[in-house]
Length: 251
Image 1 (cartoon, one colour):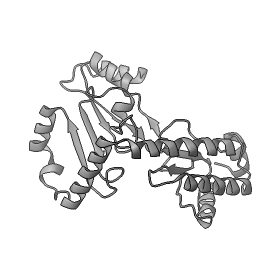
Image 2 (cartoon, one colour):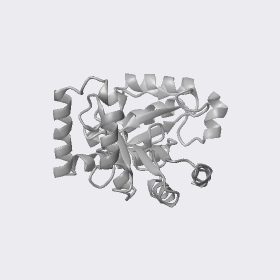
Image 3 (tube, helix red, strand yellow):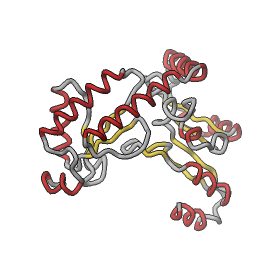
Image 4 (cartoon, helix red, strand yellow):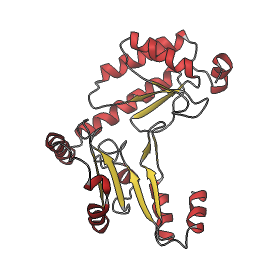
């Protein structure tokens, strides 16, 4: 936040300033500190834009994303998100925000003016999901319960995971080859995951990124934890620190 404030001070002579951030960062599952960002934006008369692709429908008490999670509903000027994840799993996206900004985008945004429209079936599916999220928090609550169970089970098993409560759960392995080997062995156990390594993430920060879903039952979660634990024992990475894993496998 100190760096952001310094940048806002430097740009005070600009006519418009926009603070742009992800609502949650996809590789770590870390939610942006929107309450602090909005406070600084108000102090320095800047706009705030949030990309909520990894938050819409899954965090916040009613699934309204990071703005609800951080108690800043109505304070963010522009929110972009996707229809391709929680809202139907298909394609397309949307921008919402202050009326004046949306009216300007309709006239000046090239992707809006010169792109094919989102297919009607995607629009209908996404609107139906929005109605479901508005009428009940059952699916959102299920994602949360699955997330809590998986995070708790994986931590107790001895894995190094990024702290938080987002449905994205990074299992830190630190070595690129190790992430691929573990993912391959998990596939043989019936668990499909992807290992991420440089340049998708920083050097020495290889991981397997797991994502919880309302489509998972507790039996699925427990099966995944059991499989991870089996493979973790095979590679001797349970209850090991970052330095110990790197010492054994390298970065």
